[in-house]
Amino acid sequence: MGNILDGKALSAVVKDEVRSEVAELEKKYGRKPCLCVIIVGENPASQVYVRNKVKAAAYTGMESLLIELPASVSEEELLRKISELNSDDSVDGILVQLPLPKHIDEEKVIDAIAPEKDVDGFHPSNVAGLWLGKDCIVPCTPAGVMRLLDSAGIDLCGKTAVVVGRSNIVGKPVAKLLLDRNATVVIAHSRTADLGAVTRQADVLVVAVGRAGLITGDMVKPGAVIIDVGMNRDAEGKLCGDVDFASCSEKASWITPVPGGVGPMTIAMLMKNTIRCFRARV
Ligand code: BQF
Image (cartoon, rainbow, N blue to C red):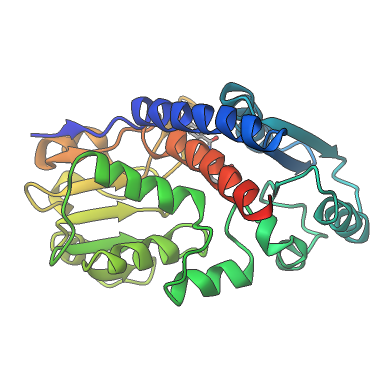
């Protein structure tokens, strides 16, 4: 058992789709989509993520604008920068890399981004749109998870999907997207009693907690599809997910690796969202 759901390969397909769309859009509208990425401070993980985003934008042929602000920047200054970018017609997508330094209120910052330029899909009007079933910008990681499931032809109708984790960025939106496909969705979390008893019900198991080794083979139903959204460093400093790959891949029908699973899909879907924002503005 245990076919690999290869996010790296699929992300290349998605980025190539975006690349041809960018070329078409430029021909049609005389300009390329432009993604603006703002990073505050020097968190090394954030720097890697931002580099991945700028590199992907370059690959697809779109424009990007990287704004690097010192950790000492005031909330007011950051909000002023966002407001400036909101009214800049050459900018289609705006993303502020999270987490932010403690003196800055993330909620205020997200609320300040124009919803039509909110490529992360974190703005309350996009969140509302998702939960009301409107056609709106979907957060990148959940969108990437769905694209991975679709690529393997996994039919979700009537299946039990268990999402472990309840963040606004992954757990909650991915649960809604699974529900939209007629899965029976259970959301488990750090206070769930007997997590294994719950995860063993899962035909599709999505894990987004941030704890290495949280899910072991004994917690998996034979034949389950496992999507590992975790992004941790093990004792040797190597990237690993929340799922113990060795024991879980023996039980699973499909499983995403870390690295090379959901991570690259997050970046690819960000490119898709930028195209979407461009189209909504031209
Ligand atoms: C890979 C992220 C936690 C908190 C904030 C490719 C990425 C990661 C892994 C990446 C992530 C995780 C991003 C791989 C962006 C995904 O090869 O496996 C790409 O760049 N990600 C982020 O922007 O913020 C995060 C995880």
